[in-house]
Length: 373
Image (cartoon, rainbow, N blue to C red; front, top):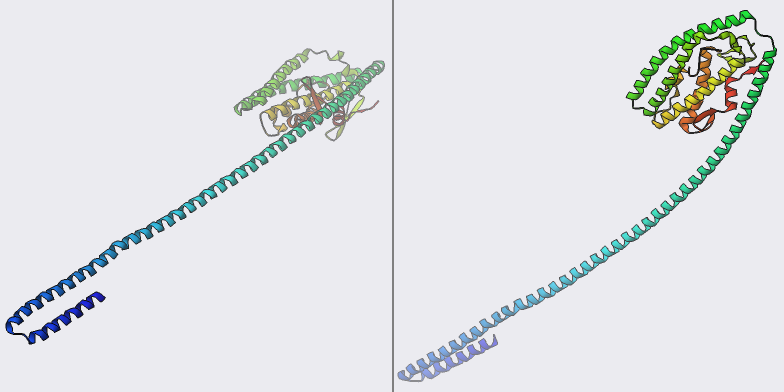
């Protein structure tokens, strides 16, 4: 800018000096002077033009340098951004590693807890097994003790029965009229019972078919066994038509036992008492078999639903005691045998060598027989 002003001042001085000289020169000289002034003016214009060109070139240089600075700035920013991205990636990687490490720590702790829990469960199972072994040992001891008591009681009953038989042989027999009345009552009862057995046999077949349809395999097998026993029992009862009642000591032996049934007291001799004991024994055995069948079939507890409980004639021939009395005592034993088998316990009896036996004290409590002489 300062160069441009100085050039204009020089040009002005030259023009002024030329004007002064020209005023004092002749015409020819003025013509030459004008030519010179034009030449000088052209030189001044040329100088100004060159100066302008130089000035115009200077900004272009700035313009060319300006993008380089921007590029450098952009590169710097890009480098900073790349550094920040690297730092962010490193932080993310560190976070992932920290999370993975935390997960591994949690997994290790969970594995330790699982191991401790399995160890505790194994210890608990070992303790349970030990306790079960102790319980079985105690149970075996209890059963052995109960068996000894049962054997002692059986031996006592055997001795008592022998004593009673000797006493009864020595004692006078019942009168002939009483014997005949007993025989007639027995014959009528046997005939009625024989007809009832035929009905029960048909009903047993129907119940067996229902069990088969219900897919109660174990109860069906038990039912078939009971049905076969019932059929054999009917054959034996049918043969009583030719039975010699006069040779049976029951009919001429006086009563020497008293028992309570249905709120009333009844009397019988040792043969009738033995049959009542048999009713309870058979009831327990059949109830035990029914309980195992229902348990193995995963069926609900229901001893009353059993045909054997409803029939309650297993082992009964129609002799010595009334059918209703036999049924009552059979069901008493059946209920207890069913409960022991279904729940796997030995509260009322025990199971040994393929046979269920009721305890002697339980049997005595059910019958409550009282010897009268």
